[in-house]
Amino acid sequence: MEGQFRSVSKLSKWLIWIYIILIGLLLASIAWGFVYADLINRIISGEFITETEIIDTESIYGMIGVAGWILYILGMILFFTWVYRTHKNLPSLNAGGLRFKPGWSVGYFFIPFMSLFRPYQMMVEKWQASNPNVDIANSESWKTSNTSPLIGCWWALFLTNGIAQWAVFRMGWGGEQLSDLLSATNMTIASDAISVGLVITSIFLVRRISQLQKTKHKLISSP
Image 1 (cartoon, rainbow, N blue to C red):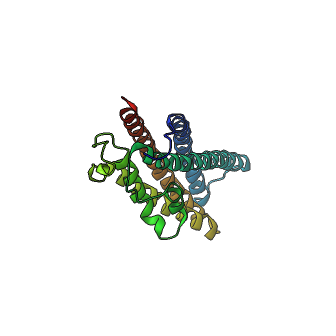
Image 2 (cartoon, rainbow, N blue to C red):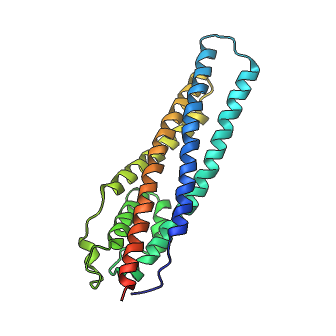
């Protein structure tokens, strides 16, 4: 075994709490997105809308969005820290023949083209190498262990979320008409809904892998 095992229990708990709060903000953003879309529809239909109502609606929607992005960025920082630490733990869990290094387990998220498949492969390796239900004495027995459809679901939502956010950015900056703003708002609502699914899936993934590593470490450490 190489290196020293570092528990990620506290880190994963912090990350999960951030994700839970983020889900609440995303749901609030979805709800207020419908309010904002309705406001735009009313303006388009020619209904008289006071300036105060427009300013208040936009302000609340904007504040929810800013708070959501702050938590999203904080969550991503903690998530990548978790990815790094859990991958660095693998050698201490007697997992040999690893394909990915801790640094690259994070780095591949930011490399064009590679980011479309390498993080998924890394997460599969992390899951399998953390599995305690293998021959612990054999450092490469993890390679034949089962993976989980949860990883595929998480990665599909991750990619879909990225596409949706890119679409929101393009639509938000590309249009000048109220109809363009309405389309961007509806796309934002859809993007937030996808984000809710991604965050929920991420919670299950982080929790499960953290538990697997904790269990495997206990088995290795027991006399």
